[in-house]
Image (cartoon, rainbow, N blue to C red; front, side):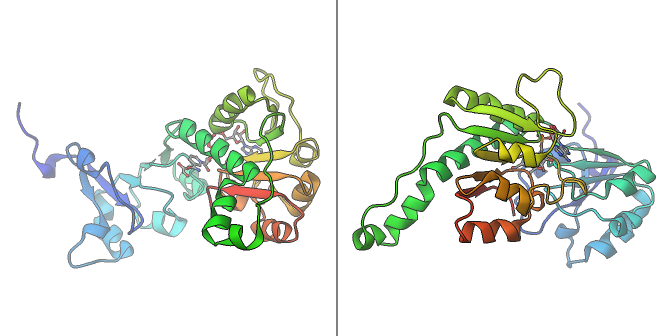
Length: 270
Ligand SMILES: NC(=O)C1=CN([C@@H]2O[C@H](COP(=O)(O)OP(=O)(O)OC[C@H]3O[C@@H](n4cnc5c(N)ncnc54)[C@H](O)[C@@H]3O)[C@@H](O)[C@H]2O)C=CC1
Ligand SMILES: O=CC(=O)O
């Protein structure tokens, strides 16, 4: 079989965070010529590197949710495709991509089962106080203050899922056998879903013990979990967020937790 020379492979520009391990780089390099500013020697800024290669670049690989802003896109006038390695694409200026007819792909459902496992793990952790109990013992407080307060069972909890997409559906599938009752909020009722639908998150919160947040982050959903929603969930309520940090008004979340107006939160996001 004839070997293809590196310079004949299709060019792909890479956007990635400096401290991120790039595990699939070797495999990609057998099919594509990767242009990565972080490999440049001597070091070169992203701006100067992108500008230097602008004329020849049609594809950008965005590893992890590294911002792809309008300013960055303006450096690449011939760009046709952005390949995102994450599921969420809120870090990419989609409006500008739409305007310029740049196609954007994401990781689809690749991570959904693992994120759902983690959401359930976080929920059990918060309810049963696994991490909190561990910290209590490690800090020597068991000996000093005595027994740690009891946790709460998962069985029988009413769980409201905010965004019943790929991850949300996997979470529901895992929680039903625990004896939880599931309901959800999304922009529209999903005809094939058997769970009760709430038109807004406030009503979802009023009617549940737990909120699991896993919807897409957009301008519409930013701070969808507001102070009012969290207050409606009540002081025995628990929030799990595996979507994006900005889906919750995090300052208010911290205040409510500190004041004991919410039982707990499990976060896989900042
Ligand atoms: N923690 C992690 O490691 C990961 C987090 N994610 C995050 O999870 C999000 C969801 O992922 P998938 O379930 O795969 O996406 P999906 O597209 O299958 O589902 C998203 C759901 O959010 C709903 N939604 C959108 N806007 C809404 C709004 N304003 N109000 C209520 N619901 C709304 C949609 O109707 C849809 O059902 C991603 O966008 C990403 O931010 C994704 C993968 C890994
Ligand atoms: O947060 C991770 C993603 O794939 O989105």
